[in-house]
Image (cartoon, rainbow, N blue to C red; front, side, top):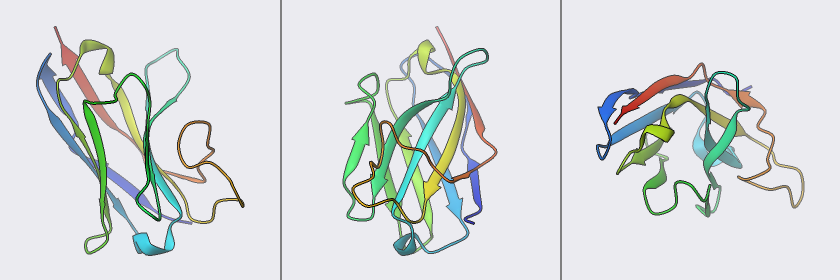
Amino acid sequence: QVQLVESGGGSVQAGGSLRLSCSASDPLANIDCMGWFRQVPGKVREPVAAVDDSSTTNYADSVKGRFTITKDRATNRLYLQMNNLKPEDTGMYYCASDAQLSPNGPCGGDWSPIDWGEGTQVTVSS
């Protein structure tokens, strides 16, 4: 089981930027897929972005062109750079991973992570 710890959330005005960080307990080279989800109270948790072991990325349509997911194998960290934030980006952001995807299993979109962090809150005011 991979332990994940998020940081970097906060409150910003619309148009601002934040960078989320996720520290993983295992080397990223041993993890097939990592990503970010977000959840607003009363709504289903939704995928935001993901990156696989070959650094192929996947983004939700709502964040394409504004968010960038990256990983740093030297520090075992996953990042989410969020620019031009909008009030609808408000939510609890969770880091997630699946160390061993099923053959041909998706990384991002309709994927089912195995491990989750506790989340970090992002609030965007208009």
